View 1 (cartoon, rainbow, N blue to C red):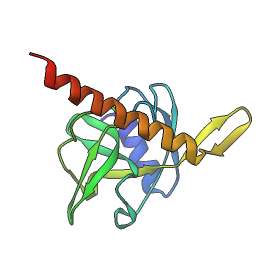
View 2: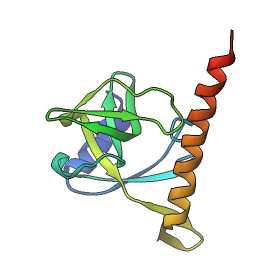
View 3: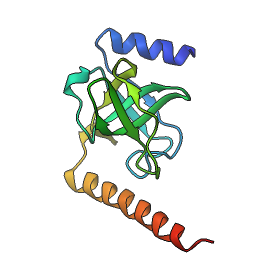
Length: 137
């Protein structure tokens, strides 16, 4: 476990929120590489499909959207990914994103229009990829 992950776990376990800079484009366009993300501790029972969570996975810390929830496992997937990740145990969910984005002098809530547009763009990208896959020989 990296020093960053250990520190992040301690901050969230103490009931505090944590901010860090996202890296990678698996959540594009909702979260872009370099965006600041704020994570809050959460009760796994409060999680719902569509929430973006930080999970400890085999490949390391992963910030993805919940696709399905079963009694003991959660299936997550990046908005920019065509397939979901391997199911994650509830105890490996470290926290949930706070739906805010930076502005010049502080923080503000994301507008519903921005959320809908970004989600629609991700769906269109997936459909386009699947459609093109039908014609690739």
